[in-house]
Image (cartoon, rainbow, N blue to C red; front, side):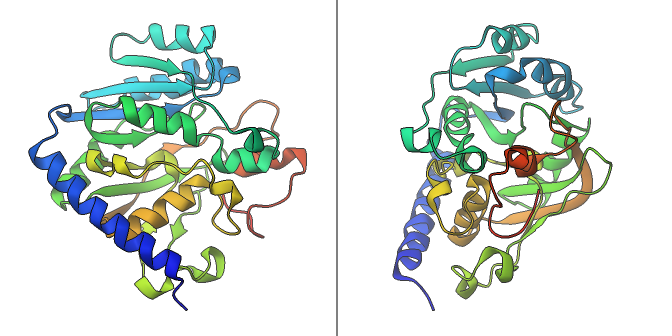
Length: 280
């Protein structure tokens, strides 16, 4: 059964996407051709990981036209120093806010939506023709950006992703939008069939910046993580999506989490599960 709310959302987003495509192609003077804006949502406590893992992996990219935007909730001297040391292509912004309800909602809710304000701030500051996401404690392989841009351009796609290794070397599970048993039936009527790789492999065109990360996704009954919410909204709006099975990134485990990553690391506090299953 098609929910009226979902039907309206799909058609509104489809219209917004059409307008954004036109404006980006004809009137967007701020974007810089060929430039990738790497957006990194950061926690103030992870300056060491940002400096030792995340940023060096960006600097090692074979694709050299990029800027890096690190965003955090409050100012961190450690984050600022880590960014400063990398040079003029690296910028640091802070000053985002989480709602009072989210701050009190527990670790699982914060895993679902906590990075959304920082991501949205970084996207706002982005100047590139492309946007690529990386988390502050993970890393890319050297050809990640070059391969992603090539796929975007060769197939005229708008959003691409690829595979990633977990800390143990195993392939991280992808998201299959047609997996209705896991993701629910809200968009089954659209027959979505895309495969989407882990968030740290996402690269997409600038005009998709109209799709903000949902700061209230944690309140939903299903698909609560902001990245689930995001990928279904863009797919339902008609964004052209491609996936490469090539491994281009690596998740790293954080100290004190027992080798866990993703929501499992947050769940070390015993907060429950995302939607009845455990996906990275």
